Image (tube, rainbow, N blue to C red; front, side):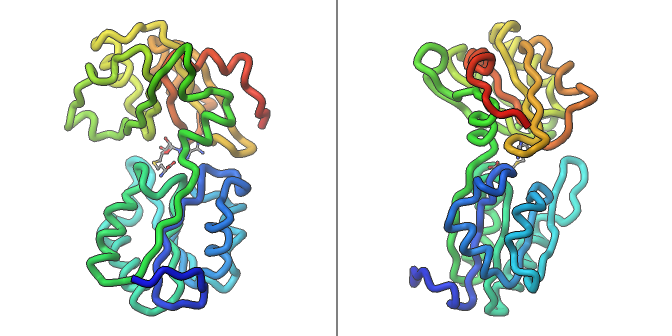
Length: 254
Ligand code: SAH
């Protein structure tokens, strides 16, 4: 496969990470590729500011998914991607955060590879990094956490229960994507596995945008925080002792 920086090369599909929201968190590479896009399939999470980087003439296809509301099934997204790729245009699959973190980017790329299309993957700042930075919560810290785990709290938790014991280490930060609707299961699972109910937790909504909000409490309050009337999606949970650092390190005021 030829690797080139020539944007005029035709028939290529770019899987691009758009970052968590703030347009300035796009990479220079993503910015350059967006400007020469001819067809863009984009997620529900992509901000207006980021969409405005695209050429007016680009064909923009919304394929966004939101919990409980699957507007376009994954097979169909893969199909459109391949169909558009075969036209020989500059096709961008624009995904929130990083394409390879809970974004089904891997599945889309498998379809692209199967169709024999040329492609590139452009990483993005994942929601965990954006949230951590803008909420003043370092995900690791020598005094509080020696590791961090990214996990999904998606609805499949009900049908495919997970082994919470592997997430009970008090010296490990947990970052939970798509977990708001399952906050009660997550809280119970972790407490039953031995995680201290007083462990600090943060739920950060619309991180890195001008509407960012942070809700801080303890693990025993996780379900209550998750149903806060002012909590707007998307939102991410951070669970662990590092959350107490937000008190002093929080710098971003939306
Ligand atoms: N690929 C994306 C994640 C897609 S899963 C990434 O790397 O960030 C979608 C989940 O990401 C949401 O349910 C939410 O938990 C989280 N998320 C995405 N953007 C967010 C933001 N700006 N603020 C808070 N959470 C966000």
